Structures are given as C-alpha cells and as structure tokens.
Image 1 (cartoon, rainbow, N blue to C red):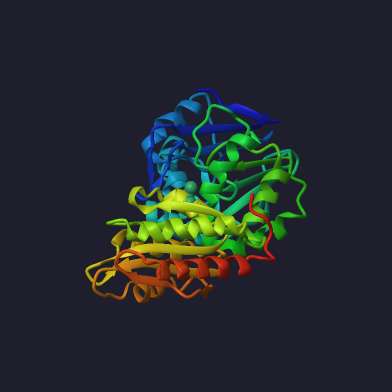
Image 2 (image 1 turned 90 degrees about the vertical axis):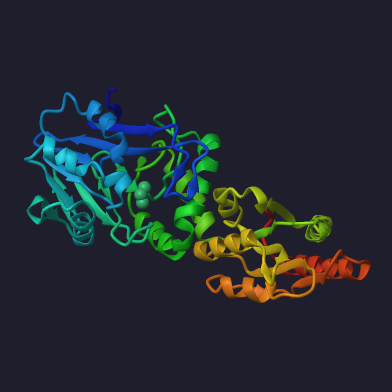
Length: 392
Ligand code: FEO
C-alpha cells in the first residue's frame, strides 16, 4: 500500500474495512467503512493525522513502511476507530508527540493509557508549523464527542474534519463522487450526527470563513467538492423538515398492517411522501436515515401482552436517541383485549419535541369506523404539512 497524494505534500492513508458489517455493535455497515489517517510533510516536520482501528493497524503500518520519522500525531478524536493504533505508532516512532486539545488528551489517557508527557496541548485557533505547512486547529465539539476537533492546513486549503462530513463507505476511490457518496453520507449523518444538529449549525457557520479546497474526513472518501458536502449538511441539520411521513410498523396478525396500508394510501393520495418501514427486518441505519427530513413519524404497533411490540419499542427508543427534527408524531395499532401501547410509546420519546396527533388504537381487526379514524389522521397530517417544502 502506498500513500495516495491529495495535494502537495498531503497524503491519504485510507484503511478500508470492506467486510465490516457492524459498528458499535449496533450500526449496520452495508458498504463497509474506512478509517482514514493522513500524512502531511513540511520542510522540517512530518505529521500523521489520526490512526486506524487497531484491528487494521497492519494496513496503516504498511503505508508507513518508508516513513523514517514522524514528529507529530494529530489526534482529532479519542474514539478508538481513529485513536486505537496511536499507542502502536508511538512505539514505532518514540520521538513523536501527540498534538490535541486538553479534553481529547484526557480521553486518550483514559481510553488508551497514554502517558501525559507524550502530549502537546493546543487551543482552538492555535497554529503549528511543519515548515511551509501551517496547521490551524479548529475545535469542533460534539460531532459527535465533546473533544472532537479538526485541522485546517492553510497553504493547501485542506480541512481535516474528523468524523464531521464522514461516510461509512469502503472504497478504492480517493475522491468522493456525489451520486455515490450521498446515501452513505446521509446514513452516517443520521446515525452519528443528527442528535447534534445545533452544534453542526454552529460549526458550519464557524467554517464559513475558511477557503476550503478539500475536506478530508476520518471515514469514507475525500471531498474535492466541499460546497456540495456542506450544503447537504446544512439541509439535513438546519432546514425545515420535508413534506414526508415515516410510517414504521410491525404487525402480528395483520390488523395493524391494514391500518398502516390505509394510512399510507391516504397520505399518498393527499400528496404526502411516505416512507413505509417494516420493523420486522429492522436496519437501524435505514430507520435513522428516514428520520433525517421527515416532518411526521407514525409508529404502527400491535399490543403484545399489555404493551407495544418490543420491535416498536426499540424503534421508538432509537428515534428518541437520534432526536430528529420531526414536528408531529402519532401511534396506530390494534389490541386484543386491552393494553397501554400508546402511553408506553409516548413515554419513550421525550427528546422528540413534536406535537402528538391523536393516536388510533383499535380492538381487533379494523372496521370501517376504525379506518375512518385513519382517514382523519391522514387528512390532519396532510393539513399540518401544507406549508412544508416538497420532499426529494
Ligand atoms: Fe469515527 Fe467517532 O469515530
């Protein structure tokens, strides 16, 4: 493996993990992922930006086999998919210092047991010269940990953005192509970044003053089209939700499914875009992605014993963690003899600051009167969405 040149004296050491299928024992990775390290060579010093997941450390060291000296390891983030091989890097390059902010230093000492004397602490906006290459450190907290930062390389107009603008995409292409990277980026945003939309808005404003030619994230390909990438982040994080409803459901004997089908038909007839998700085969990333721009979330659940179906509970809990910008929520479903499915779901989503539209919980198989309630719910959703931008 040879480092790939991005621009003058800036190299990608992308460690692809094509076969990884799960991240954090939670997030599906249909297209694998990559852990991106970068190398920047000044006339006096050489800096390695981040490392790789320790499982793939051998690939990182293959890239570094001709590198005799590393002066600095720039640690943007303490999570182990990027920091986990730093102890091995320091073993091989004992003269190297880890350059990071105080919070990240604390985390690296806790998570990797790095000794305090290995660090150089930097402040937000502080610079470090490699000789003809000036690194400016840019704090970017809460995308998605509190210690995360980026680095702007002034002479080459490169932003090393860490997880920010990343995508879980293993690829042999150095640079991103918009039609390929869009979906993996959206999936990544939904799973990792969506709960921190207000931080993202602030960071986009902070980065507006930089002239950026390349964005080098810690996952996925390098972006040579920063405007496209920053615009879609702005859309996902800041813009109003779209005229779209997510109907996430599970059914046991078909009654809830009948309600779901009726709702979806009526919404579509009223001009509302609908994403219908069967939670029976839940892809957490798919569920998360659907929530990025939806104005309404409807959970369809049967009643199991006295509560909602556990898969509906899981989806509601996941949505609550992800804090989507939905404005309206509701619950539909059926029960055999009783239960508190609606109350349980409502109690699971306190982080979603949305208006609750009157739930429709019915006994047994839906009657015409029950379906008429669904029609009313669909009409209400369509009315609520009237002023929202079109989906798409
Ligand atoms: Fe890719 Fe938050 O680590």
